[in-house]
Image (tube, rainbow, N blue to C red; front, side, top):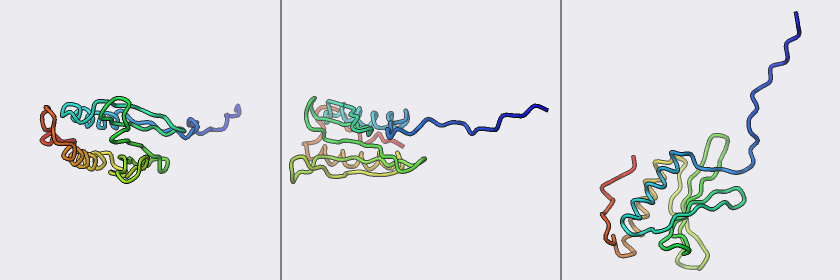
Length: 137
Protein backbone atom coordinates (compact mmCIF):
# COMPACT_ATOMS: atom_id res chain seq x y z
CA UNK A 1 0.00 0.00 0.00
CA UNK A 2 1.51 3.35 -1.03
CA UNK A 3 2.18 5.94 1.63
CA UNK A 4 -0.42 8.66 1.82
CA UNK A 5 0.83 12.22 2.01
CA UNK A 6 0.17 13.72 5.44
CA UNK A 7 -3.04 15.71 5.78
CA UNK A 8 -2.26 19.38 5.66
CA UNK A 9 -4.65 21.92 7.11
CA UNK A 10 -6.00 24.35 4.53
CA UNK A 11 -3.78 27.37 4.29
CA UNK A 12 -5.19 30.73 5.20
CA UNK A 13 -3.99 33.93 3.64
CA UNK A 14 -1.54 35.62 5.96
CA UNK A 15 -2.92 38.49 8.00
CA UNK A 16 -1.21 41.65 6.83
CA UNK A 17 -2.88 43.99 9.32
CA UNK A 18 -5.30 45.47 6.78
CA UNK A 19 -9.02 45.42 7.37
CA UNK A 20 -11.67 46.35 4.85
CA UNK A 21 -15.44 46.57 4.77
CA UNK A 22 -17.81 43.82 3.67
CA UNK A 23 -20.41 44.56 1.05
CA UNK A 24 -23.14 44.65 3.74
CA UNK A 25 -21.13 47.03 5.95
CA UNK A 26 -20.29 49.36 3.10
CA UNK A 27 -23.91 49.28 1.87
CA UNK A 28 -25.28 50.29 5.28
CA UNK A 29 -22.73 53.08 5.70
CA UNK A 30 -23.22 54.38 2.16
CA UNK A 31 -27.02 54.30 2.57
CA UNK A 32 -26.71 56.51 5.65
CA UNK A 33 -24.40 58.88 3.76
CA UNK A 34 -26.76 58.99 0.76
CA UNK A 35 -29.78 59.86 2.91
CA UNK A 36 -27.85 62.80 4.27
CA UNK A 37 -26.66 63.97 0.86
CA UNK A 38 -30.30 64.17 -0.11
CA UNK A 39 -31.05 66.24 3.00
CA UNK A 40 -28.12 68.56 2.21
CA UNK A 41 -25.81 67.75 5.13
CA UNK A 42 -23.05 65.86 3.30
CA UNK A 43 -21.60 66.50 -0.15
CA UNK A 44 -18.39 64.45 -0.20
CA UNK A 45 -17.48 60.87 0.66
CA UNK A 46 -13.92 59.54 0.82
CA UNK A 47 -11.83 56.52 1.70
CA UNK A 48 -8.43 56.67 3.36
CA UNK A 49 -5.91 53.92 3.99
CA UNK A 50 -3.51 54.84 6.78
CA UNK A 51 -1.07 52.15 7.89
CA UNK A 52 -3.43 49.32 6.94
CA UNK A 53 -6.49 50.91 8.55
CA UNK A 54 -9.39 51.93 6.34
CA UNK A 55 -11.41 55.04 7.07
CA UNK A 56 -14.61 56.32 5.49
CA UNK A 57 -15.24 60.06 5.84
CA UNK A 58 -18.32 62.22 5.28
CA UNK A 59 -17.68 65.88 4.46
CA UNK A 60 -19.80 68.98 4.14
CA UNK A 61 -17.72 70.14 1.17
CA UNK A 62 -15.00 68.50 -0.95
CA UNK A 63 -11.61 68.98 0.67
CA UNK A 64 -13.07 70.14 4.00
CA UNK A 65 -12.33 68.52 7.35
CA UNK A 66 -14.59 65.45 7.70
CA UNK A 67 -17.73 65.92 9.79
CA UNK A 68 -17.69 62.17 10.49
CA UNK A 69 -14.98 59.56 10.07
CA UNK A 70 -15.71 55.83 10.41
CA UNK A 71 -13.12 53.19 11.22
CA UNK A 72 -13.50 49.43 11.43
CA UNK A 73 -11.08 47.93 13.96
CA UNK A 74 -10.17 44.27 14.17
CA UNK A 75 -10.57 42.94 17.73
CA UNK A 76 -9.82 39.30 17.01
CA UNK A 77 -10.12 36.65 14.36
CA UNK A 78 -13.91 37.02 14.21
CA UNK A 79 -14.66 40.29 16.02
CA UNK A 80 -14.60 43.88 14.79
CA UNK A 81 -15.45 47.25 16.26
CA UNK A 82 -16.99 50.12 14.32
CA UNK A 83 -16.00 53.57 15.61
CA UNK A 84 -17.17 56.97 14.38
CA UNK A 85 -15.44 60.21 15.30
CA UNK A 86 -16.16 63.86 14.69
CA UNK A 87 -14.00 66.98 15.14
CA UNK A 88 -13.90 68.10 18.78
CA UNK A 89 -15.09 71.68 19.17
CA UNK A 90 -12.55 72.54 21.90
CA UNK A 91 -9.25 72.01 20.07
CA UNK A 92 -8.39 72.11 16.39
CA UNK A 93 -7.22 68.68 15.25
CA UNK A 94 -8.81 66.79 18.15
CA UNK A 95 -11.61 64.31 17.56
CA UNK A 96 -14.33 62.91 19.77
CA UNK A 97 -15.89 59.50 19.52
CA UNK A 98 -19.58 59.72 18.66
CA UNK A 99 -20.56 56.08 18.05
CA UNK A 100 -19.07 52.63 18.66
CA UNK A 101 -20.32 49.07 18.49
CA UNK A 102 -19.26 45.58 17.49
CA UNK A 103 -22.65 45.16 15.78
CA UNK A 104 -23.25 46.98 12.51
CA UNK A 105 -26.97 47.58 13.15
CA UNK A 106 -26.35 49.12 16.60
CA UNK A 107 -23.53 51.25 15.19
CA UNK A 108 -25.74 52.58 12.38
CA UNK A 109 -28.54 53.41 14.88
CA UNK A 110 -26.10 55.30 17.13
CA UNK A 111 -24.61 57.14 14.17
CA UNK A 112 -28.05 58.12 12.83
CA UNK A 113 -28.88 59.71 16.18
CA UNK A 114 -25.64 61.70 16.18
CA UNK A 115 -26.22 62.81 12.59
CA UNK A 116 -29.70 64.05 13.56
CA UNK A 117 -28.10 66.15 16.31
CA UNK A 118 -25.46 67.41 13.86
CA UNK A 119 -28.15 68.32 11.31
CA UNK A 120 -30.12 70.22 13.99
CA UNK A 121 -27.04 72.18 15.01
CA UNK A 122 -26.42 73.09 11.35
CA UNK A 123 -29.93 74.51 10.93
CA UNK A 124 -32.00 71.48 9.90
CA UNK A 125 -32.69 70.02 6.51
CA UNK A 126 -31.73 72.18 3.53
CA UNK A 127 -34.23 71.50 0.81
CA UNK A 128 -34.28 67.72 1.06
CA UNK A 129 -36.81 65.47 2.64
CA UNK A 130 -36.38 64.59 6.31
CA UNK A 131 -35.07 61.04 6.44
CA UNK A 132 -36.06 60.33 10.03
CA UNK A 133 -39.02 58.26 8.82
CA UNK A 134 -36.73 55.86 6.98
CA UNK A 135 -34.57 53.66 9.16
CA UNK A 136 -31.96 51.00 8.81
CA UNK A 137 -33.01 47.74 10.41
